[in-house]
Amino acid sequence: MTVLQQPSPLTRAAVAPRRRVLLLGGTSEGRALAGRIAADPRYEGVASLAGRTSAPMTLALPTRVGGFGGAEGLMRYLAEERVERVIDATHPFAAQISENARMACEALGIPLLVYAREPWRPEQGDRWIEVEDNAAAARALGETPRRVFLTIGRQGAADFRAAPWHDYLLRVIEPPRAEELPPKCEVTFARGPFTREEEIALMRERRIDLVVSKNSGGALTHAKIEAARELGLTVVMIRPPERPGVAIAHDLDAAMAFLAS
Image 1 (cartoon, rainbow, N blue to C red):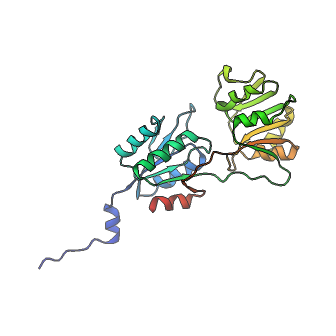
Image 2: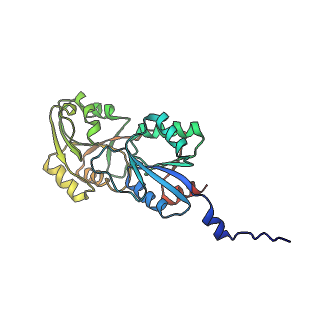
Image 3: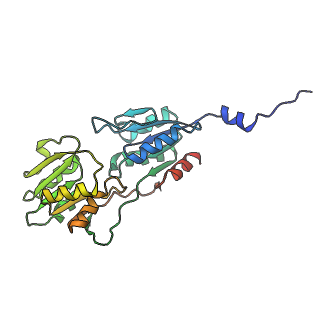
């Protein structure tokens, strides 16, 4: 009589195929998640970065840089690479890639999770004007000329050409195109994170009247909000885009549990 030996749980785990995962990155949270995925033998992960900066962050996973070619291109990639789970850990305002991911995963029946920072919420002493987008932020600055600190990145600066009577200070990492800037705009190049004291000193030195910020959440860029509160400055706060119909997690353990589900 032949006796078939059952493999031990350890042996079964060792020979089980690894689940293929695509991580859409671009945030510090995505970087931390890439490290967790790379260290877990259950997963075979690939990270993707948009490539909008000349020095993209280094991730613990094999990384591709550049777009997919819209939702259809992403769909082809997911099918060809036999991806089984997708996590969107892009910037909260990277609306296009997030929508492409939703459409592609929905078409292929692939589970998708948005791993996002908790948005900031106003605290005592904050003076916020909350708006939907850059165009509304430009309108919210008012008709009286002000000294405005733009902390929205270079890609949205062109929207403030609609309010050319203000003096702008735009802080960026990569140089913007001159034709996209408001007529009266000083550009300063700096990479954060910045401390609360540094932000207070900058706003005082440049005589800032108003701050424009995206509500990107997280701790790394919150110092400017604390500085504005300390100085009694109004913050025009742009809300993050809605992400209807997609599961959202705000911590690493929840994201890893999604991969195992």
